[in-house]
Length: 428
Ligand code: ZN
Image (cartoon, rainbow, N blue to C red; front, top):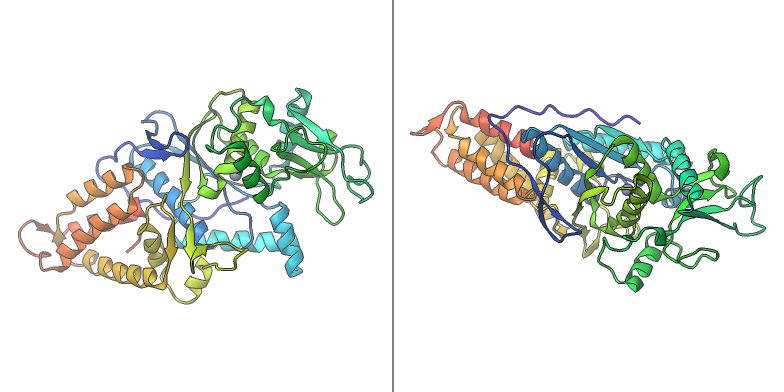
């Protein structure tokens, strides 16, 4: 599917520093690769309903900072993001609201695109829907069945499951075929079971070899959409295999960074990486595991089930400047959990106004140090709050009467403007 139009990325003098990121698996800061090979980034995208709340925006703006830092460091970036445009939660939402699931998905994907464009997020190289990835999933699941890494589970009897071929069951991956399964999230087996069950897993389904085995292919169910699955029979893909197949097809070789919100660490990322290991026979198909924090509102994590969503599109409809929304997000480190308050927005709007005033003056304090500081902050695990502080200090100096004195230049406001545009994605 098409993504959205990326904003222009201004050129900056010199080059950014090699980027270091906090790897969830290692629990420590780790370098990304230098120069040479293209950077490969896979970020799990939305399931298209309730798009785009501030939690989503926090994740995608966070990874946008990575793309910007990599490109500033001279790296070509291949960035793939999926859209889970068929899955249980989407069908459940459509059923609750009486909408057609496909229309719901399409409208929410369009909203997501316009929100991302408004927030000046650089578009991924490829935005791939689960539905369009079905042929990839079918091939992969057939391959896993052929070599015994996957198996069929009988369908519930008498409920019309399986359509004309009820004897072809659902297909599950056998996690015991991957000796590294379960090592990613740092959870005890009992915790894994609990988290799996809370996140779409079905540990108690009869016929599974292991409670944690994830669904690869779900056969036709009455009232659910289905697609041609070749020898699998008609059905639809599981969630984890969807991401594994899209990454494998569109990011050949190793995935340098697999990213998403922290709620995806387990089971989603553990399971998709396990599928990647099995399918590619690579010991470490993912180099770095990078996860954003959770955004809360009114005391709880922002989520549709709690109904405490702050939607980007609603803020914009109220007349909020999208750059102020972006500055709200940049005020927090991407890995931190934080709680959104109206005061955040008030503060970010005031900050944006100060930045604009300072960067549209005729002269300003030299901005070379500002560029160096912002680059250093971004290279250090995308430390946006540190970068924002550096910009604030330049702005304070520019507005504090030092705009026209010694050491100032008529080019400096433009240099500062290009710095915050290219590295922070803030257009002033
Ligand atoms: Zn994913």
